[in-house]
Amino acid sequence: MSIAGHPGSVRLKRLLAVVVLGSALGLAAVPPAEAARLRLRATMERYSGNPAYLAVYVTDAKGHFMATVQIFGDKVQYYPHLSHWMRAVGPQSVALDGITGASVGSGRGLDVSVEVADALIGAGLQLRVDAAAENIADDPAEIIIPLEPAAAGRDATGRGLIARFRFDM
Image (cartoon, rainbow, N blue to C red; front, side):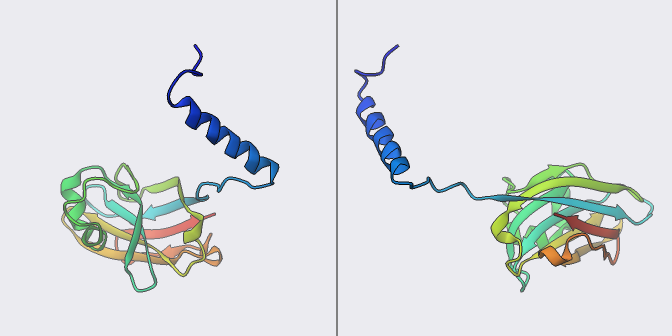
């Protein structure tokens, strides 16, 4: 089927001409934002009770929210216990800008890979983790790590539910 007679074909031909001309002049299209792959790894402390919910998110140096990286735990009714993260995204927020996954049990580990915008790495930002489990005190910003290449591969010790947390690049 030919689109030569289609009303949009003139626009398509013009777009093609611009692309060909741009290529001939050595102009490249602006690439989409690059993403860095981070590997998040954590080991939970041993405790009695249900699996913990975790919110991994990025803030500026003053703690102002930038983006959600990953939420561990998929029951929305428990998100208010991830208090610093929840305050930042708002209780009416139903669309997450990160990924959700299973909650993490006592003594268990997690190991996931996520993508974050390259521009966030080395920009003076922080990776933070809120933790909460039923019948255990919530621990907002239990982990705070600079989102810098120098911090990659170094364990951070939690104050409550998280024994160790790190990211690798």
